[in-house]
Length: 282
Length: 289
Image (spheres, rainbow over the protein chains, first blue to last red):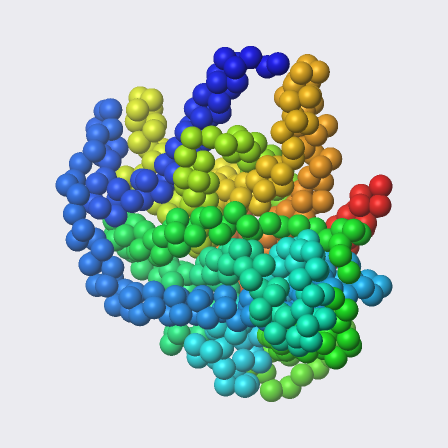
């Protein structure tokens, strides 16, 4: 028996460590949040002090520095939302097919999706932008959205395969005996059981799409800009920006993701990266 | 359930169309183009064989970029894995406000690499930054941003990347770690095994496939590192933080030397492919054992 006292002491130590680590990781973000409110340190005084009264003015200054900012925020939202939905809609049936088939090389094929997910975007963005121009998808929301969906699809297939391969097939077999067709089984039997991990995958794909830079960057010459593209343009062309205004823009672009994660944190716990094994149900 | 050939075709077709049209075909077209003088702006195309690759490899800038990315990957990935594991270990068992720790600790990963670059640029360099504030408290004089220092720029870029990616690693490792039965930890504790032995003997063997998978993702991300350094340092000072992906971006879009940009990008892809092949081999061996 491990004593109750030492167990409690261990829990206290764990909690203390967690507080310290969380504080360390969030300090830069807290600093940025304070700056966005106009609360800045005065580093020239000894010891450094804080100055400035909290204000929301810097949030309205974003629109003055970058007039299209709110438009770009809308573009980011629509593109990431639609792209995440397309990714999952396309990856879910494919992952099901992979999880319920046995053929030589099945496992390697699934792992190949993970390797594909790790492929640096630079390897294909240049021809992607060139081909998109030829089929008139450049500078369109559809072009950006479809490309974002394709980039994140390999990871979605890998993750969904992991959760589908783990499910028992009993319900599916019963539905087959009842004479249900493939589409019906997928929508009415498999999807409800796999719903938590599908939701988690959707959320993670949204975050990945929201933060993509290279792919949307090469697909636009300025008409359809997402937030990361706008940020990169802004700072590449060496336009100086007031730190509080930049901080406000950063906070605004982070807030939607933070809100989503906080709202759906329970669903996120179902996001499990699981390597295919030889004991997967065929 | 048993799927017929037709079922499989129907289920896989949408993915095949999306990946084919927007990922695989562009990638293969790009690969073929690296053997030519093709560029979106030129009207004539000539076959040049491996000449583009030869020019890339001979470029001292590219060699510097390769050196940087090797250091970057060898330092960042083990740090991300071990730190991410340590935090997941703390969160493994029920603890007060566990959901909130999980949400808060995921926040740095939600910051896009580009926004992270902007943020750290100001935090490290600005007169109102975090670095000078800390030094001020210690009674030290203000210092120039480490981003501008030849020796400190690369470690700084690595630190920023570790700050952003570690929370994601914790997020990925936690379910695997939490699924190990509590009894196994308790038995080892009772047998007097110290913490490092418990981790090495219980958690690591159990989580090997997951660690391998996360490792594969991290190495791929790291080899393609681009947006983290783009704003933070722009590859500088000199070539101190130049990465192959940034080199490729610069050749393709800034100096408009398209064939060189594409060839250098495919060298990165080849490296990721090699790591991927090793990943498939290793996971086969370990799951057979």
